[in-house]
Image (cartoon, rainbow, N blue to C red; front, side):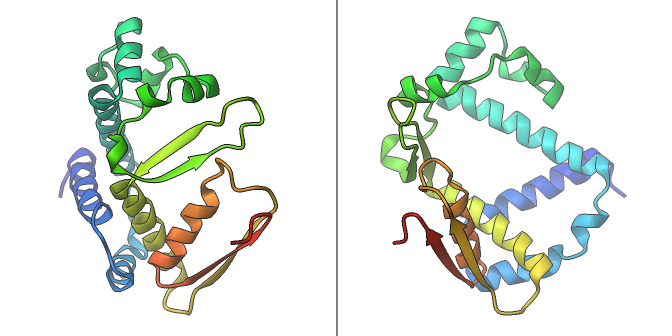
Length: 196
């Protein structure tokens, strides 16, 4: 039997292989069938190991791909290797909305020609804030979300009405919800202020 850390590494490796590739609804259904019931049986040590691995990868990625975070780490005297758990994040200053707005190109971690989806706030506090996704980011969000939906939902037909009482803006949950439902082979209907 593997230790929690070894199981976490194995689980994380399998997740990354699954989430980053173009998957069909049939692939998602097979993944959901494998996951159904197993998620609840994963022990806390394994979950914490996966979270720790993902945190370290994210911090390494930020340091390697974002000028803003490279400067932030240098200014605070923190190296990505210093951040091994969520407790270590307390040493980092917060990133504020003004940083997103004013340092957009320095914060962005993907090349501009790799942007697959962008979301803008309405700009009510001044200049709009922008968040960009690569194609791989979109795939990971859709694959993971659809697998979780189907692991709970089963094989019944899937139709979701996504109600939007406000303008879409930076609240990207509506778009991610639609990606997830569509990836799961369902029909996503967005209703609200900005009906397409």
